[in-house]
Length: 201
Ligand SMILES: Cc1ncc(C[n+]2csc(CCOP(=O)(O)OP(=O)(O)O)c2C)c(N)n1
Image 1 (cartoon, rainbow, N blue to C red):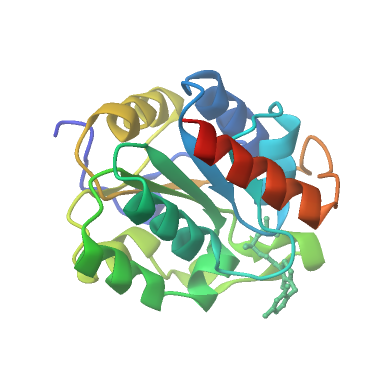
Image 2: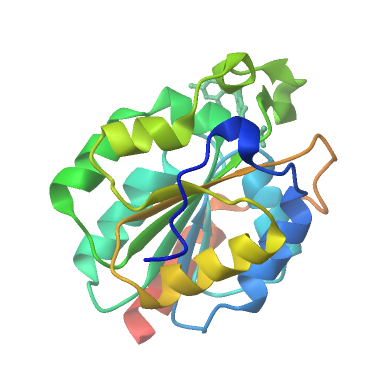
């Protein structure tokens, strides 16, 4: 698994979340399910293009990984991607242990680490003081965990998420630029559309 590199947070290039989200979405086959976490994560997922198999978590921090894990276990032939912010993941670190215990081969987790709770006013998160989310994922037993060194490495990791055996954990350091859009806050419609699309294949 050559895309997995042993980098520290300090070694990872700071990138732009909107641009990375667009790169990710551009590579996705239609059948891949993506669960976007609260914060600017789902704003940028929305802005990157509407997909029937996108879910946008509007209200609760830390639920992108648990929801994506549930989809991955229920539909093991479907590739599933969780997108989460650093602040949200820090609130629900136990989910990483649950992922390790379940070992879903079809799940990849991407975390945008901007070192802040950006959407609520950019209060600093613990990662800005040096907490390394990749080290935490490895400690939880997710061996395929890595920082994205730069944009080219990120693209290789997206390919790995679509073709390799999971669970995969990727963290990317991101800047403090605002998101590219705002999600339409119709929770019932988001849920129904996602569930209908998952039924259809
Ligand atoms: C339990 C809980 N506490 C606080 C909030 C308010 N809140 C919503 S999003 C958010 C910050 C999310 O930070 P992060 O996941 O790092 O994403 P970013 O905003 O940086 O994109 C906060 C504090 C919440 N929704 N739920």
